[in-house]
Image 1: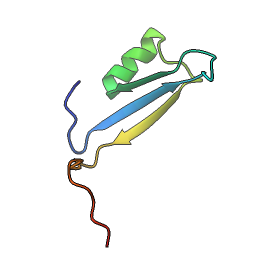
Image 2: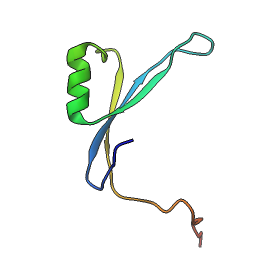
Image 3: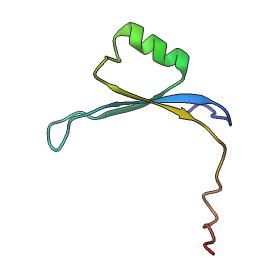
Length: 67
């Protein structure tokens, strides 16, 4: 898995079905990788792509304190 840093932009790719209909595909691309996948025909117009802006790290080991 590649490093992700604050301020990075990544693209989440979803292709669905299931409930016993089969394939579900979820992938994570940089802009350059997404462009390459589109040129290669692995990403189509009816697929869902969501842009994600990384805002920073979160310490998952420490539970949040609610006040």
